[in-house]
Image (cartoon, rainbow, N blue to C red):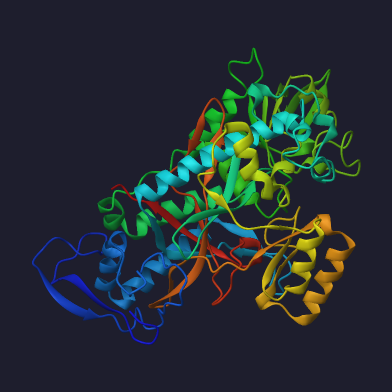
Amino acid sequence: MSTDEPVKLEIEAASETRGTGGELAATDKVRQPIEVETLFRDYLLDGAFDEMCTPDGGIRPHYQALVEALASLPHEELLRRKQSADLSFLTQGITFTVYGRDEGTERIFPYDLLPRLITASEWDLIERGLTQRIAALNHFLRDIYGDAKILRDRVVPRDMVYSCKHYRRQMCGLEVPRNVYIAVVGSDLLRLRSGEFVVLEDNLRVPSGVSYMLTNRRVMKRTFPQLFHSQGVRPIEHYPQLLLNTLRSLAPEGRPEPNIVLLTPGVYNSAYFEHTYLARQMGIDLVEGRDLVTHDNIVYMRTTDGLKRVDVIYRRVDDDFSDPLIFRSDSTLGCAGLFNAYRAGNVTVTNAFGTGLADDKAMYAYVPRIIKYYLDEEPILNNVETYLLTEEKSRQHVLANLDKLVVKAVGESGGYGMLIGPHSSAKERAEFARAIEANPRNYIAQPTLDFSRAPCLFGSRMEPRHVDLRPYILFGDKVNIVPGGLTRVALEKGSLVVNSSQGGGSKDTWILEE
């Protein structure tokens, strides 16, 4: 493959027979060159790591079966399957809220029909790296809200911790069930030109997107059934049960049959579909703050049969809105008295209050040191180079190179509060420069990364688009990581923004057996 020629593939083409899923059946096959002029017409390599193609234009071995299946299908059949997948998302009400768009906020979650494939050996490295990372970050939070040895040893600057808006002094000295601060994590990974996976950021407060991972898989199994089973794709359907087991393992002492609920901000929250989906899959109650009440430091849920004690709360409400007696007094989304019940050890809230300290984007720069300090190990997964703008030299370098860098607000998520230098206007850069000078602690900067691209289907042709990967890590009595994650896609050509809230989409992630 070159940058200006259509793809030519040597594939096995069946003479007549197809399997029940539409893929090629194992019948009389002959080797013959097939020029897939339409399918690959716009598939061009630009130097970024391509998940499907080698630098010289060949097809990577683990993608060969997928390419063969696509090439064997008539264009009409490919479009029919795409329409069938779209209809499935529509009928299930799988939606996401996109803020700031003129066409309305509620939309069907964008989905690409082609899976992203990852080999077993690549996944093994990712799994080990994420297990190491969650262990170190949990040690860090326990230490910060306890003896704070890492601050006394000057591994992490004291002012960096205490100036973080997600630091919660109310957590100091508090006993956390099983000493687990972060039970659910969604870390974002990128693959660089070298093929190396790196961690872009850690999402520790209320990481979202796992419902889309699960629904993507269900749709894909119906869309390419034979290909799915022949590839030996590792399962992810057990995630809700793993999450439920994790929550049970964190229940207060003396509650062998804990009552577990999922606390949602309500129907207007962008991830409300996910909240309802996960509660239904786990068989637990979905509640809002108004459904809860506290008495004598015990949390109860209002039911038609009266009050029922709550033992574990899977919290999808930010700290600030969780308890108006402790945090924001104007919040109607939480439950008054929740924190005192938590402090008394009568209810488990996960993730714990104050975990946002460890996913502050400035604190992210110190994670390699945190791993070394607590585990005495080198990071298995590296960080992206990060400029801390509280440092004068770094700040001046960033201000002089805003057109080349990505600038992020440290406490934002979902792609908000971000400047992508090469795609920005002079006016936007000037605004960010003023904001950085006014509050350098609130921003970090990173190089504009040319991260990997994967094939996406547009009509009856494939085009490459930038992708990241968000695996989901569960930490209770042990660490569990389902093999896969949410592959997010920058659907707009040339875009580097994959966030769903900014108009990105997703695709299924297949971890293949060797």
